[in-house]
Length: 149
Ligand code: DQA
View (cartoon, rainbow, N blue to C red):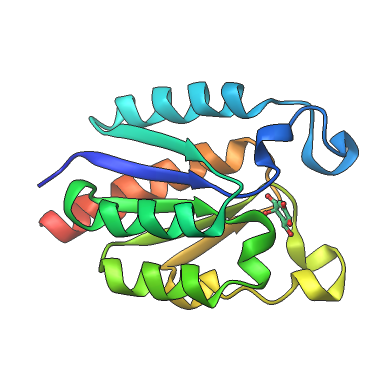
């Protein structure tokens, strides 16, 4: 079995650190990449960490993960709330999925309370900022070791 996790980031997350820091914090996406890769390593996993502003590219990356990855961690950003295409790709890939958000989406505007991604996710981690990615890697490692047992 692959020991790689696809860690997928949606639109505007390339702006982290500069973008609304009072909501999303001052940690850049590159820093989150570092934290995520290091955490994956502690579990004997590797993280294929990607970001795209393009919905179709996110769908293609999820499709490719079907045969190359053991699981998907996804912060689909604004597409969380709009994209049936990303939901369908996640359902089709037949891998464990964990949804992450930096902010607590339930504390924010009503339109952020609904997530299409959640229908495909084993669990959701939101509101812990950059640390949420580390928590998601820990949870994914547990899911994968349970699946192996
Ligand atoms: C986000 C929350 C989304 O509502 C928003 O559109 C984002 C980031 C988060 O990580 O908190 O871009 O996914």
